[in-house]
Image 1: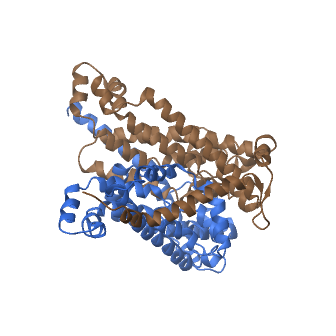
Image 2 (image 1 turned 90 degrees about the horizontal axis):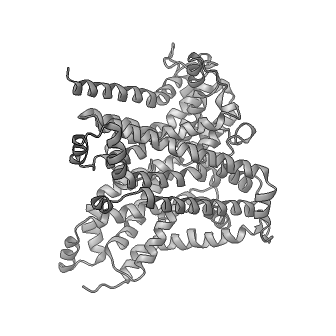
Image 3 (image 1 turned 90 degrees about the vertical axis):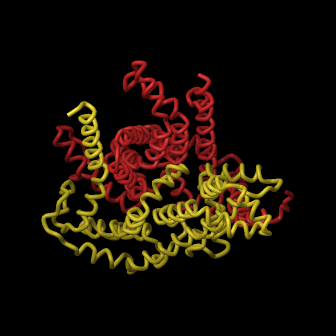
Length: 297
Length: 280
């Protein structure tokens, strides 16, 4: 059946308008601005690579922000996925109504934890006299107020992120339910124990889901902002211990009005996220198996 | 008791223990909000209040910077509802085009839409800010809602496409034979059948907009226009630590709509994540 093309463009009109005016043109503009000195009020002054050079060679706080963010991504993403996976395995071995209840309850922090209100509560839980230091104290482990100590502040933010494991957990759980019981039974008959079945059956079958969660969470983690901003009262924490990349970008752009500098930071962030995603996709060839591969093995 | 039942019992106990740990921060926030300030000073590790004191809520309702909590609430409602409506309408339209219509640029345009999911908002942030500043829209709700009306949240376009692809094509063809054009097919066939995708989009758009702090911090600058997250922050900056109770009360108030949404739609939300891979 022949179709005219114009109705499609009518349907796409809002999206097209947005893609051009709010994505494509701003991308080009931000690339241009990253080579300028621009304070929002005067016309941008072309400075070539000066912003980038300054970022990489003269700005110690930028280096701090990069290290803090990398630490955060490298610890919080695996930790969150591990918790999500463990919780999904636990729930998958339950039967009946309890399962649906637990699933919803474990998912709740994913929605609530992203809010300013909960970040505030989190700060108090890890502060002096808060639940976490005092519980650890009873176990004989003495910790300072996490949020005021340069060595500990970042880990409070990491735990806040890991606590929101509900969304990847739900995705893992959906994946686990797709595993044919025959496959696990056959492995059990062949003498495979719990761990062996996990490594040889569950992990390969679930690998596309693990990969999906990993990519999504990594992209997300690079852009973390709210929790660090609130826990550090907007300043990046004691001795810049929680000066996240986006926090520093905000500070440079909207605190110091160095818009060109902030734009350069944004472009480096984009390149890093693209690079990490590409690396993950490359590594996926080694460890992610799709249905047709499995059938052929 | 058989080994099997014993194991099931152990699993239940483990799940229960994990549940307590996971819900502790929420329970703690709720009880902290009704504890008298004197009880909160220096002792933040107990769960049960000795006395119930609602004065924190009274203070929280007064708001901050001379602006009542009701104003923050109203502003947040406008932004979150506008976002949800904008996303639903524009993403359903775009989703229908990508999923059901044939046109030459479909593949490249859809590929571009998928790529923008990965794009950090910070890359377009500064030019967008300049654009809204030049048009005099800073400190209004438009910079927050307009991008959604223009479907810049490509994740929801993708969600619509995925869902609409699953609707049998025969229905479209029957509608075409009956004389329906693409607009009537969209309105009468695909849209009603896409209800789960629409509800998912509306719920998540609302909740994300409610929690969103960064763009509201950037675009709103007068206290009268502050939404709850920005208002909450203003409140902390202004009050000393002796207003702990009020701070927690305001935090609880800020979570009420999400909690209500969660209680009412938890099945939908969880299903939405499971089938579309949304981030929570």
